[in-house]
Image (cartoon, rainbow, N blue to C red):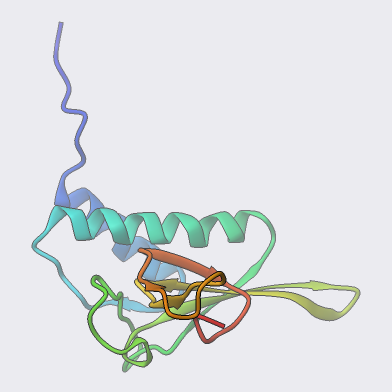
Length: 130
């Protein structure tokens, strides 16, 4: 019986990420040398794809020279990275809008002094933490 490897290679993740970026008319410019970062980017793409399957229109925002720039760590200002806007139009009106961020710092709803940086944030605001 032939054994198969249950792990996905970095090359496979990179191909999926490039295909995803091409589908959304962006370029994948950030190359990672860590498998964990490729996995995180792939998870981000799966969340975006989920909203697409649910009928949302997706728009890549804050591209840098046409490139979608992933935020692969909590470091750095969010304005320097890309994100997606997911919107759904009902009866001719855009009435459902979400923003999908990567490693965005968010303020706690329960305690205004607590902040965290989840890997993936789906927000009703285009300013995480609001």
